Length: 299
Image 1 (cartoon, rainbow, N blue to C red):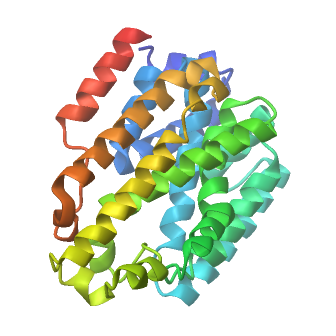
Image 2 (image 1 turned 30 degrees about the vertical axis):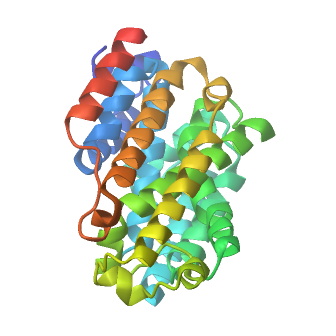
């Protein structure tokens, strides 16, 4: 793995200020999400790493703003952030080094600004005002408004000129699976924070109440609901087959590792059953390390 300085040079980032900006973004990602950062550094082609690191830092910034405070505070803060982002994209400059790095990445890679605008709009509406899903259609609308553009403001930087329609559709399938797995794995923590991410209509179908989930009741109806949700997630994960062919060669080892870890996490959810109501289901330490080492050896 080349040094960070060499990685910046390979991406053509040579001016001192920009190098500092990308370094600032990388440090933010390392502090907030060390596992994804390590995956990028170890597995992605070095010329792609700075762009994707800036994209991940930007995605995280928007997520954090859209999830902090009351719904009104989240919406106002996200709208204010959107104004700063738009100014940075238009001018290429900003007082914020993270936004400077991201604006440079968007401009250099040619990512259509419509994906950024769509993500920010979704953050100020679908995410900031999130109150659960009434039905599957609402979940799909959430993906379209927020989660899908959210993943493309990051992964879309792998493509010069942005993703084409087929590539974008592949990432739509990927984020559908990722969100379903994430909602199940984080069910306990989400419920503790007042978020229910399983559509309410499906609780009704199984005769389950929100209180049943919040109180971790191990009833046949609760088990049937969680089993059905896991099957939906498994089907969505199977539908991501072919995503590697839609990724740039330099990012394929990263996507393979991400998909393998999703599968590992979903398998853990399936194995523990109703225990996901009492504690979140993470990756652990061994599985990510094994995945990284195997992917690194196969590069």
